Length: 375
Ligand SMILES: [Zn+2]
Image 1 (cartoon, rainbow, N blue to C red):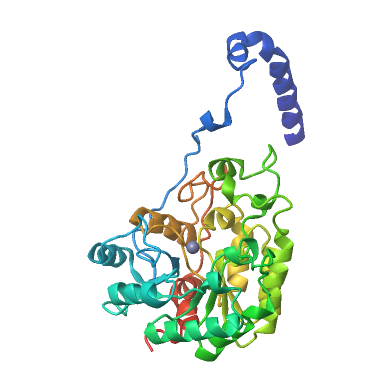
Image 2 (image 1 turned 135 degrees about the vertical axis):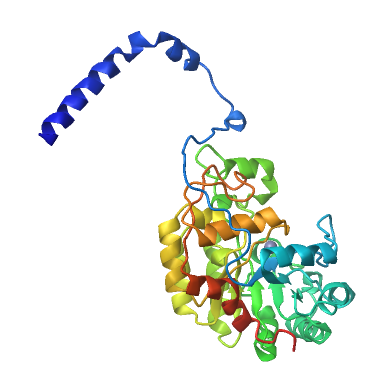
């Protein structure tokens, strides 16, 4: 009976299909022979779905990846009183300011943010790559990290320039696993502070910027973000070099930023976490990636629930955090990620994480990794 109805339905559909050209000539003409520039294509979803806005994080949260009021200055400064009020409304207990530079610049962030609000802000220091050609660079950077720690920094941040841009006087790129850097990685282990490391970038940034590139819009906006071509190493080579550092420094904890810079391939990230117990990952600016594969991402976070840290990497607007809370806490489907569609033309679905896992991702894991907080 069911089969009969189904086949009748197919017959009716195919008859209608055959007639459609004749029946709706106006509709056909409207779309025919016209090209729509991609930038003008802004489809509105007709899906009617439940939406759950999350005003406050389910647990007091730590954003381990932010740049607010950092040592680079720029246009992102937010008055501290305003920032604290936002954090209170959001149930955000701490923000980690990763880009604290070193020396006097670092001191300014410590004095302005960390010392007056030690329970709310943490700052990391950074290496000074301009000194790469000095003999004993690694030892000098270890000393700089020690000085940064004495000033109040509680971690070392290494940006993607290592592996992609930093060159020594020979013109050679300094690889992530360059032995000159070993004393610096080791010093972080000695001090008991983590290294937050960003190596390479999205897979699509290493591919031709053509009609098959899923980040075509983004690379059109920011052509300087493309690392395709002979001037740059392959992404795999950068990640492999980074992984060799993880292997070589088991006594140092590494926060592999942006889901170990490979959220497109959580199998690869799982391999990193399985091989290197000294590595944890962070989510910054990658909920677009995680949220377009919500079942896989959920499975990944449940499996590595003690090793995933909440981080955003966006200016600390309240709506931004609420977008993340909705992503982590609800089962809502098909909604816009923050700054959509900058990373790609897709939507995300929520992970609906269990409460005990949320508590770990939001804060407990970060508190373990930042064990020397405040000391
Ligand atoms: Zn960042």
